[in-house]
Image (cartoon, rainbow, N blue to C red; front, side, top):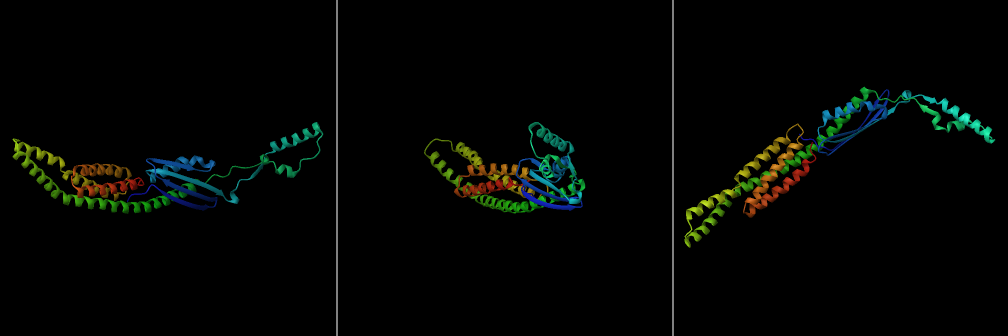
Length: 289
């Protein structure tokens, strides 16, 4: 079953150390592009997370964000930067002596100096919690992509059926069309040869060559084969977007040839309908992994 390249997933996971929040979004792209945003303290896990994404997703643009909220019991301890505090005190003393300023530093003043206080770095995500949660997040993303992929498959199948129906109508019509065209040309040739010294055998030989050039039987057979290949590919569990692209190119080529060769209004109308459906198929396939 084909997967869509678009999807969204969101996850929250709790552990004794804290709570993890994750979001993942997938968009269309010709290749696999991965962007992962982690807390700075946990950036060392980024490559492992990239490798995990590559195991589950083969094509598309994947943006994932992980945030980590540590529990109060696990929060880092507050530290006082005594060197900075001593500099403030010494600077205040110097200014008072040098310029005769009045006033003293108070505890309220000290708490207003943000660079005096800091927190110990104690915010690393537990690796097992991170990897297990991230794998669940990507699994949820894939479930969404599969749901949308199933809708795309149904639409593509219906459009392939419409193409096949028009091919069947052309195939049924073509023998009558070629016969009518041949009869009209023979009548004209008979009139021309009766009124001149043109070699009738030579003209009939050229007629046969001309009618062979107009024959679309081979194009019909090839186009039917491409439709069957298209259907078989849709049922595959592997990424199929690129292969479907190539099949569509061949379908376009054959339908264009049929439209240009057939000198028949009915067939030309069906060929146009086929091209319309193929163009809609092409647009949908751009969303397939």
